[in-house]
Figure 1 (cartoon, rainbow, N blue to C red):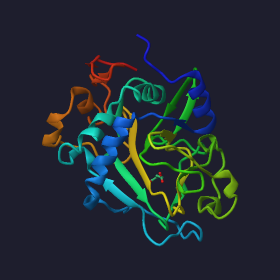
Figure 2: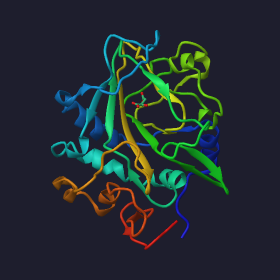
Figure 3: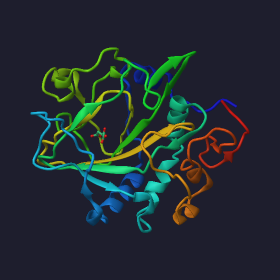
Figure 4: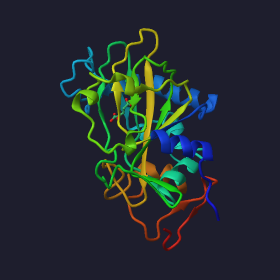
Length: 286
Ligand SMILES: O=C(O)CCC(=O)C(=O)O
């Protein structure tokens, strides 16, 4: 049976740019539930421990990006909208296109927040100058394939120039190393694109596409971006789900949701059908 895949237009745009915006991905109800859960959990917000501006003179700010994590195990009902997103029927065609049959949550979803003065993050990504088995982009025999991909759900509006997620379009195919000053957003800023979005839009990008964070400059809008990252069924990039045993709350998930938390392997792997519910276990599927 043919699997649901992205449209030809979306394939063209992703292959060209290394990222794709899917406008209006979330319904108003989904967006409201996610935002209500975050609003109810403000005391869980910490500072981003991974922040790194690499000595840049332009990426600095007065404080670090805010971060929420562990949403899948937040108390009920606030865990639910996040659990519902990890296997979303509308996301399946994208994951099938990038990873083929079988994909998994690379690690725990997290939320990045910013307000006026929040610092950025140095631009990073593997590009194509050497093959990186965990973060790569290839095209062969009519198919795209990626290592880890990021599904970034915007839970609040982002206007171009506000800051937040930025990409260098086309850089997933770049053959030369990105100069440090470009990575530090000090020169050639015109090649760096701060993607404008409406709340509810989804941005998908390959970890091989050069990307980072521009300091947040809006005084009237705050950033709230939910990042859920997936890898193909055989790959694990960042550590997370789950080296030994699943925690107890995993019993509350559907079979399909549980299946994306499984460690990387191929033989007898549970695979999700396009309805987002049915799980099959073929002995081996390429
Ligand atoms: O969305 C962003 O601001 C960049 C995310 C990112 O690359 C990271 O946090 O490692």
